[in-house]
Amino acid sequence: MNFESYPDREMLMMGLADRIASQLRASINNEGRATLSVPGGSTPGPIFDILSDIDLDWSKVAVLLNDERWVPETSERSNTRLIRARLLKGRAAAATLVPLYAEAERPEDKMAELAEGIAPHLPISVLLLGMGADMHTASLFPGADRLKEALSNDAPILLPMRAEAAGEPRITLSAPVLRDAMYTHILITGAEKRAAIEAAERLPVEQAPVRAVLKDATVHWAE
Ligand SMILES: O=C1O[C@H](COP(=O)(O)O)[C@@H](O)[C@H](O)[C@H]1O
Image (cartoon, rainbow, N blue to C red):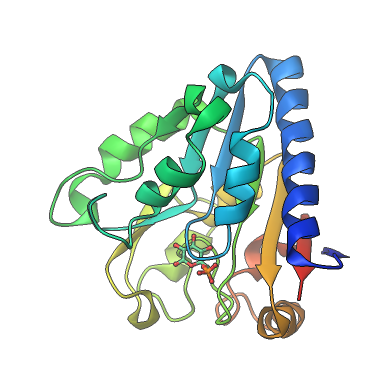
């Protein structure tokens, strides 16, 4: 992995937003389109705020989540709710949201429909990932019920995922879809996550699922 350390979180968010915007512009110039895949959780809000105000042709950008908690958008836990509120506003309101949730009791009930909506937007141009201190990324959790399938090279685009640490059932992009991204960035903050990502390099992927995407990723960190 490439590791980039920033003096503080503000510089991290600004520097990385700038990098992502340049890569999106390059994809639009080369291919006429770009797909930006983003994490949910508690870390990326500030970078979404900055990105949403950046001047680029957002009408050519498809925005996709890396993973979703199987809850409706009325829930504070919804990653879709987060990106609607923090990313798909201002200039970025012109982007197309590719859904990763549809109303149904179980993710299994909507898997085929959601995967069909994602397929035309692959491969991902710019992938922004988060990571938990337990070394999960997207919803690839250590000990999750379908982790092995999601890590395999012939995994489908999407999988449902359940793990004790995950709370509600999840839906996640699989490892090969993440690995196919043109540019991969991992955004982490704090000493605990820095130690975790360093440990992940030495652990088997089943224990440290983030390892599945580490080789070609740039990790962006600030205290
Ligand atoms: O549950 C999730 O957690 C990870 C990490 O989130 P954070 O709160 O520690 O920043 C996130 O990357 C993932 O998309 C999300 O669903």
